[in-house]
Each structure stands twice: as C-alpha cells, then as structure tokens.
Image (cartoon, rainbow, N blue to C red; front, side):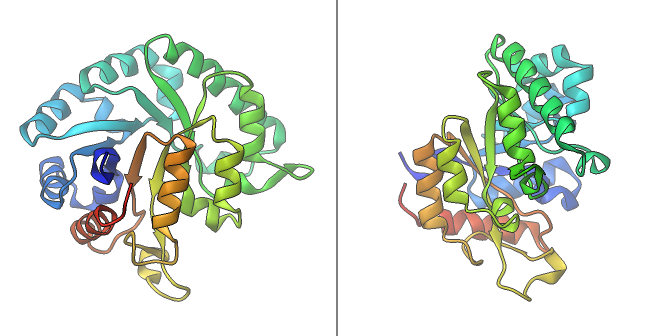
Length: 255
C-alpha cells in the first residue's frame, strides 16, 4: 500500500478559497484522491457528493460539531450514507467551554461515548479530535483528554490524533499515541514552523518544511492503527501551495 492510498486533506485547510468547486479542483490537481469534509458539507451532502464524483474524489472522513451530533443525529447518518462516510470526528468544544473544570470533561467523554455506541450501530465510527487545550491538568495530574477517554469507558469512541497540537501542548506524541493506540483511527498531518518563522500563519508550516519528523511520525501513527492520514494547515498563506507541497513531501516517504 502506498502513502497516497491513505492520504487525505482536511478541506478546512483551503477554506479561504471559499468556492467549493475551486477547493476541490485545487486538491485534485495537487494529487489527492480523498478529502476530509467539515460539518457544513454534511448539510448539503448530495451536492457535495456530485462535486466529488465529478473530480474522482472520495471522502475519508468528516468533522462534525457537538451541536449537530446532539440536534440532528439522524440527518448526520443519512449524510454519511450519501457521502460514503464511515468515520466522523468531533473537532472541538466551543471556545467558552475550553477551560471547563474536570466534571465538564468527564460529562463530555460520557456523552461522546454514548453517541459513539449509537453511531456504531449505524456502521459509523465516531471519534474525538484534540487540540492543545485538552492537555491541561484538570484533576490532579489528569488532563482533559485523559478524562474524556476515561469517562468514555469501553465505548467505541475513537481518536483522531492531531500530532502537532499534542506537541504544542508540550506532550510527547509517541507516548500518547502508544497509550491510546486502541482508540486511534486517524491522524492529522500538520507541521510546526521553526521558532520565529511563519508568524503570519500562526507558526504552522507545510508538511515536511517544519520541525516535526513526519517520516517517523507517519510510521508511529499507522502502526497505532490510523486508517486515514489527513493533511491540515490551520492558517496557510497560500492554500494551493500548502496542499501541493504537503502532498509532494508525503508521497516521497515510505509507508
């Protein structure tokens, strides 16, 4: 299996292009065959599916908000069927909830675990996507991310590892990935610029041009069970260049 067989790109990376046709043309021209959609794409699944089909693209996965999971789970399931999705990830809690106390994170983990049970019954794996704020201690030394997984218990709640956000949270990504390897189903592949560089891009970099060793981290994620490796850049200055440069670098590594 080649690297590109499991390589996708989060369409959030290209959001400043605004037009979905242009976004999909850009990722297809860069070489991608799979994309990770955002929650708003689920609201117009048939239209998005037609645009993907026209370019020979498929979905690897999608992000979906907690509000949508709570308010319209049946519509989400139907959208997943339309788009051929079997992997969903809740990407973040709202900003006002990111500093909540331990009990709030436990409640979130329990609720996500229950949701994961219901979605699994529909053939869909629901997971959580981390940032760096979940690495803050909330109960003694226990971090918010640990509390989420602990409260989810034996549920099928999965994890989309955002490796670069783990690093920004001063965590050892290999240690975390190995500790929760049974939950890992996908990883976000993004890079961090050297200190003082790319400040206009919030310090992010095209994959392969930053400080993370993605030849090694790719292997770690895949060996832990990541089915999809999803390129992302949170604030690229040139989304088309980022998509192309990241693809070209990753294509050069061995799977």
